[in-house]
Image (cartoon, rainbow, N blue to C red):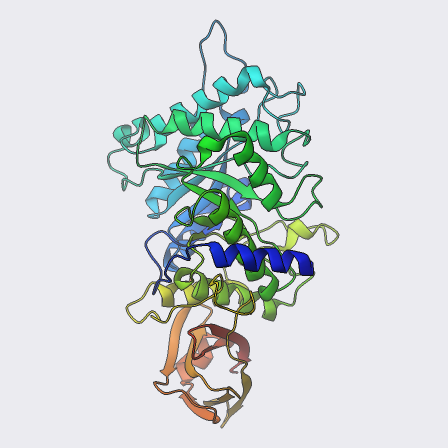
Length: 475
């Protein structure tokens, strides 16, 4: 939780920053998902999950390109030996479903870490060049014009365009020791970027997703980046993007942390350097599924048109293990193992499809804007009631914003794969009055789906939005 002093620092930094203008709709390749557990399962299960991603408007799939998996043995006589079999299979499956890999070039190897046999330890200084070489040959294989694509010309040509360097390098779990981690990681990032750019000058090389706070044994995201740039001032002008993992208890705190980090990036690297949200989410063991749905739908709706210069939203995660209830990480999935969506998956993909459609909202959302008195979403409050009547053949929705709003009402059926829109209403005028929306629930709809999801979005005078989702039984 940020202190009052922290709030004041953020506000001052934002006042000095040049805020990028907000956008309407979602640009190409804005949405992705983390799919670590998808590819941990049998390849026979991949197809259904990947098809659901594609149907839901997802374009990017984040998955580790672990160095250890490709080069488990140290080079001999200066000669590197790589085994690409695992990654070739994954890239093939992704391309067959028109999905593009968003790889994490991450972690050390058992032979290159400062602690021998520990692939999560910091890359030893005398092996930084080996890590950079791996990044270079990886780009030569899977990047623009890469060897893989030349030898698989029958596949849709979807080369890697973004390369995220490491994952949560400010957390002891993924990068240890932490004492000089910001300085050493700055050198590693710059070496990897310098190795990738000759292969693809247009490639986006991203500073790996930073965790929040000190709970992971390191320093907070702002201090870590400050130390990186202090050690390597040449990062200014030579950083393509910085990734962030703003895990927080609720949506308000999540967007406040994004706003605070936006101020840090502005001050250190400039307002033009984007932030990429490469992990964010809520565990179903700690957050009600209804709230998970609301939060993810709101992020998908708000971030593409916010003033925070966020260029990627990749929630964690598509599926998760769901085995040990004492392990929070096991319960972040928004889809089930049979490729059907949870309520959170339906809500998230519903917003993705809406934001990628022709009717995407055009009103800017101010989250990081310096003129906002409070660094938090200012979407209008919604009072919502609904009732199903006449033998489940009618749905009546009554909604009101006490301070006035426009509204968008969407009904989503949780079809296996991506949700399908089965009803839609919009209002053109701002109003404080209660509005009533009526939908006919056909016999075919009720027979095919046991539930539908009601998604209500209120748009305030300043353009900020609030989204509420409810699961409605229709039979």
